[in-house]
Amino acid sequence: MEENINLARQFLLENFVSRGMIVDFAVHSPDKENGISNPHFHVMCPIRPMNPDGSWGNKQRREYVLDENGQRIRDEAGDYVFNAVPTTDWGSPETLEAWRQAWADLCNAKFAEKELDCRIDHRSYERQGVEQLPTIHEGPTVRAMEAKGIRTDKGDFNRWIKATNDRIRNLRKKISALLDWLKEAHEELKKPQTPNLAQILGEYYSERNAGAWSQRAKVQNLKEFNEVCNYLLQHNLTSLEDLQESVSALDQHIATLKENLRGKSNRMKELDELLRMVQFYAAGKPVAEKLATIKWKGKREQFAEENENTLRLYHMAERKLKPYFKDGKLPITSWRKERVRLEQEYKDGQAELSPIYAEVKKLWKIKYKMDQIVHEQERQNAVTQQKKQEIDH
Image (tube, rainbow, N blue to C red):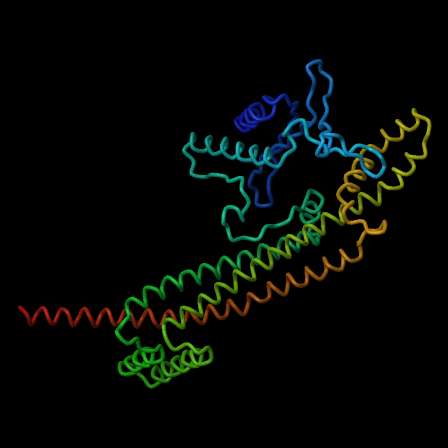
């Protein structure tokens, strides 16, 4: 823990304090549900600079809009039009990205110093090329409820996402292995005129029946042959190329389904955030209206101080909800209906994976049979080659 704190302090000194920022950080070290330690730290710092005399500086400055003659432009109310330009880059997305990368580099350097193989990456799964749907942030309240056995919407949603990710990983792994095998099998079985799958399987099962010891084994061979041929017939698969195209189509379908689920997941998170802002807005609006009616400065400041957190959340929500107001109203009902609809569509999309999984299992069964065919052909070729060498000698 001492090394962790020193690493955090080094990061904050190099990236924040060196810029003139005041930094306050708190170290936490709770255990996860599985007993694994989860050390982390929280940071608070201003984005308002300080002047040389110790007073607070301005977060932004005015940059007036000029006409072609270099004169300031006025709006309909007669006020000069201007853009608010930040005085520092502390609040920019680019700076945040640089800080995230700096922390990753610092941690990875420490891992390398200690000869540890683990590494961290500040980029999102999507930017890393990791095929995984992201979960949503649960927060301490939801986690506390889940720990007590109380199911929550966010908890259920994250469980759906984790189950979907597991299913997608398994499917993509199987499909990737199938594509690799099909490529190898195609090379092994490639001939001037490629025989169709039914012929190859027919020859294979004929040889198996010829060497079967009992009638029961022969019946079982015929039953398996019939099942495989029916599948090939139903899906119009007559060659190795057809089989490979079928597997590739499944892979593309999974990719499309995953992208669709990602879009719904992102929109649900966006709606959850908007509805959370609505709660802050509804709770803070009467407080803000009451504050506006207080004329005496002392009482006004006292009231504002007593309700500081509520007013802060209200003004934050007001800024974020401003683009969505129409005729003074927010489409709250529409948002909630859309959230319910997307959740159902997400469940339906997850359910689509089950039949795809069953399809992949059937293809794996065919793959197993074809593996046996290739192995038998290699064995026969080796025997033929050995006999030829014996005759030559």
